[in-house]
Length: 330
Image (cartoon, rainbow, N blue to C red; front, side):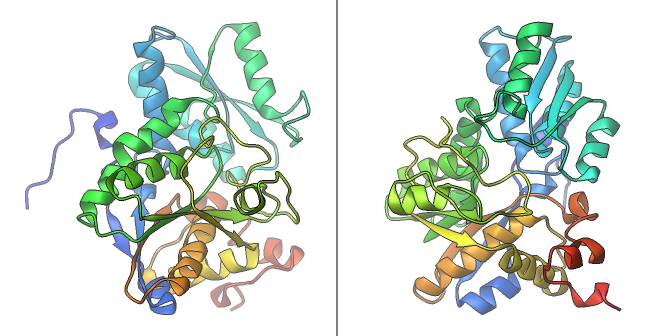
């Protein structure tokens, strides 16, 4: 086998494999495939959006090498922007809520980003991290990437992720499900899949505390409960998610998500983050409603090592009355 040689890091973004998830497939009665986005250079699905947002801004002559990219992020988009930005000659200033995992904050600093931590407050608060990032760009002269409402994010998945899924399964896809943070992945992949086959079922996987489930089911921006998952769940409809062709939604609890990722560690040899648990739990629920052996695709967003101090920490799990994997109790 001849290994493919890339001319630079940018060409290593995307074209991730689809992995059949043995445990999830067995309990659902369907074939569940995970798009291995943790294999991107920055370690997450967000590399795709980061690359497309930078290239789009360059095309529009909004930025040039040497400029500073400013973004509000739960971590992964910031990591992607910083690393890809480094490769393209940009500096990065990242605004992040101070309750996000220490591992992601440490990674951002290790990548060379300047980090501004702010208290976690709702979007309606002027001190929300998104508004802080926008003000920093206005006041200090930088480019606010605006991943939530920048349609280059969604375009990344229309152009790359969706077609890759179609090609990987030769168009034999019955359903796609993933969670909503910016909405770019679910909306973009759904657009691409339905362009190929309008009958492919597209489903939002939603944690507690997010409005997406009620919006799809009831047309209301309401929610209940809360979640420890990071980078997903939403309190509004972003421009990336507006008018997206999503058919249904599944509500997933933290306990359901954690049980899924702990089983994936034991049975699939994959240590994933909480958002992947939400996604795969949704795929299992969707699978139980479809005909046996249906093909369902979801997103494996990032490694669980980015949340080791939380969802793989016995003390954190006990404090939050969450499931504990048996190997941590030994």
